[in-house]
Amino acid sequence: KQEVTQIPAALSVPEGENLVLNCSFTDSAIYNLQWFRQDPGKGLTSLLLIQSSQREQTSGRLNASLDKSSGRSTLYIAASQPGDSATYLCAVKDTGRRALTFGSGTRLQVQP
Amino acid sequence: DAEITQSPRHKITETGRQVTLACHQTWNHNNMFWYRQDLGHGLRLIHYSYGVHDTNKGEVSDGYSVSRSNTEDLPLTLESAASSQTSVYFCASSESGSGYSEQFFGPGTRLTVL
Image (cartoon, rainbow over all chains, first blue to last red; front, top):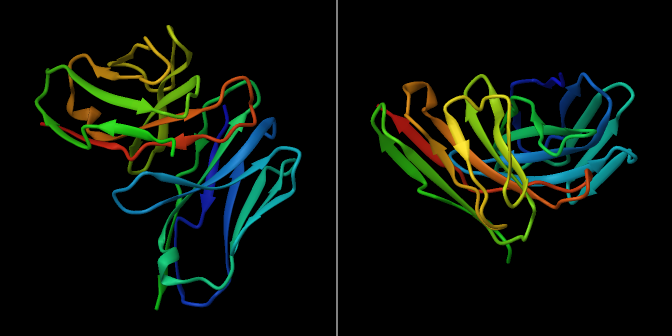
């Protein structure tokens, strides 16, 4: 059974810092990995989708990498801003499934 | 723009009552999913559907049911609500026929069972 772990569970940084969020998964037989952002009391917003054949994806100040063989992904946020404060969720889609398996998330707070 | 809507956004009910949460998507996606989100457990899959008249159980399906009569809607029914079903419920959809497609989520329904 696939298990997804996100470390750290919470992170507080001053504005302007570059930061890395980590995601690990136990079964490397995946179609893709998605990073989501969730604001308090809100739904999930898809940030980046990395296919199993890709190494990284970029969108603005966000860069996600994937090392399928080692079961790891990182989300890099450059020049963090207070507006980046949210919970970031990592989810994988296993080969043969269409549903996602989620990590518990990293709660990020960027201090002005 | 295509979207997923959920209703109601907030619901308070009593133990033992039947409750139905609505999910409607305009993406024209064949795949639809229901997840629940609880502190300490993250999001967990309740039920899913790959098309009209297709439904399948997820990892936490006990006490829940779904039906799929058209492409756009996948209502989630709690047959007899229990306090353990107090949670935030999310509906999601994705394209069919591809394991590589992105999944999109609705805004969620916060359900409280007293």
